Image (tube, rainbow, N blue to C red; front, side):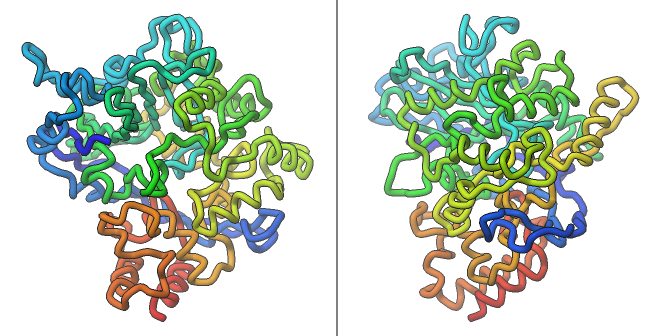
Length: 508
C-alpha cells in the first residue's frame, strides 16, 4: 500500500458543524430480556441512547497540507511512470508533477466521480452498462457511519463495472462510498503497478463549515451536500488516519498479517439490507426511500432515473472478481430472512415486532465475542416506523418548500433493535463482556500494533499493566466532545451503568 495521503488546503474543522446533539433518552419497552444474548434476539431498548457524534477534534492529529501533498506525491522505485502508473486517486491528484499538469480542485461529488472514472455517461441508461459505472445502495451498515445509515439516508456504492464473465478487472479500478450528512466520502482503489489495494478518506468543506451557525441539516442531508465543495483533502489508511476513529484497518485489515480486503457482509442473495427490485426486502427499502425522496431526486452520485436499478449482485460480483468473494463472518441472508419471516409474518414490510433467527444468532455471537466486526441486524428494516414517518413528512415538506429546516433524518433507528444491531451491548452483560463487545473490535492484538491505541488490548486484558488500565478508565469517563472518549459514540452507545461495569472490571 502507498504510505501517503493528501490535504489540498487546510486541516478540517468540524467544530462549526452540527454533529454533536444533546443526549437522547429512550424509554425501555417491555420485551424479552437479553437482546442479542439468546436465540430470540429480542430485548428492551437501552435506558439511554447517546447520539452518534463526531467529536470536533476527530482529525486534529492529521498532518499539515504541504507535508501531506508531498507525502502523497513522493516518487518511489516501484512506479517508474509516477504518478500515471499509481492508483487512480494518486494519479489524479499528483498531476502537478507532470509537465504542464495541475492538481484538480473538485467542486462536488460528480467531479470526484469523473476523476475516478465513475461518471454516469447516460443518466437514463443502465446500471454498469453503456458507459455508466455500476452501483448499489445499502440501507443498513456496519461501516464507519453505521449508526447514521438507514433506508431514508442510505449509503451509495459506485464502482467500476465487473466483467460479465467474472474475470478480474483489467488495469485500475475504483469503488466510492457516499453517506449523506458527512463531509467526506470513502474510496478504495487498486494500484495496477504494485497490485496493492489502497483506502482513502476524501474530506471536503462547504461554506457552512466556516459560518457562525455551522452546517444545518439542509446543508448536510439534502442534494446540497454533493455540490459547492472546497478544500478537498485526501488521507490514506497507512498514514496518520490509521490512529483516528476513522481508521480503515479495523474493517478492511482486521488481521495485520494479511492483506487488506473489501467488505460486503451480505454478499449472497437476497442481500438483506440492500435496495433491489429483485427481492422483497429490497423493494420494502426502496418504498421507504421513495416515500421521502420521491422519484426525481438524484441521490449520492446516482441519477434519479437509475436509483431503482440498485443491484447488490453487481457489487458481489465485483468483490468476487477482485478476490474478495469469501467474507469473514458472512451474513447468511437466505436463512435469516426465512426464519425472520416465519417468526413475524409482517416482515419485511413491518419490523415491529422484530423477527427471530437462530442463523443470525450464530454470527451475532461471533461478533459479540470480539472475533469479527458487528453483524448486521436480523430484520430488513432498522427503522422505527413512527420516527421514519416523522422524518419522511419533514423531508417532503422541505422538498415542497413548506419547511426551511429539517430534523436529523438519520435519527430514525428502532431503539429496541440497537442491541441486536451491535450499536449497544447485550443486555445484562458483565464488565469484561462489555469490554469485549464494545472495544475489542478496535483494540485487539491482531490489528496494526504500531498504532498508539494498541497499547490497550482487550484480548490481552489479564496481562495489561495497571497504568494502561488507568488510561482506559480515564477515557471511559471523558466527555463525548473529545476524540479520546471510549467507546466512540459514533460507533457505540452504552448506559452509565454499563460504563461503570467496564470501569469496575478495569480496576481489577
